[in-house]
Amino acid sequence: MYCFVVAYPNAPGAKFDFTYYCEEHIPLLARLIGENLVKVEVRKGLASVDGAVAPFICMANIWVLSVEELRSTLELNGDEISADIPNYTNLAPLLQVDEVLQTS
Image (cartoon, rainbow, N blue to C red; front, side, top):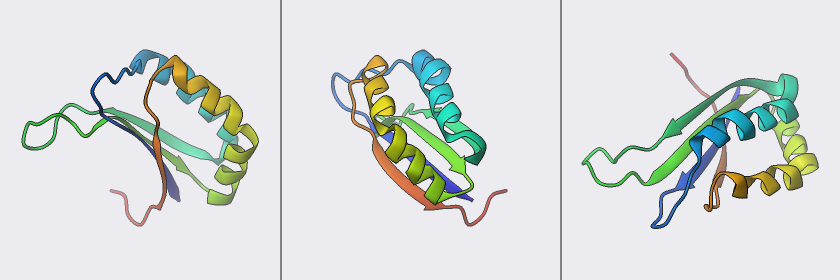
């Protein structure tokens, strides 16, 4: 299994509409990813461990079965996905694909 990590770095003046993200954007991604999707987790950054401002305002983990299928989906639908970003944030996401070695 693989995890597609989408992280939105916190910054002065950052806006993030979690309702839109969870109710509109994530379902859009789920529809496009289709049967390759295992599960999605969306997290809101509250603070660093020491109480400082959270380095990320939002992080999403999107678990998929196939990296190749994910890449194909993003290549085919990247314009549609990118066009939706201004509807919920003024931040540019950082993207990473991880191989899941262990879950518990």
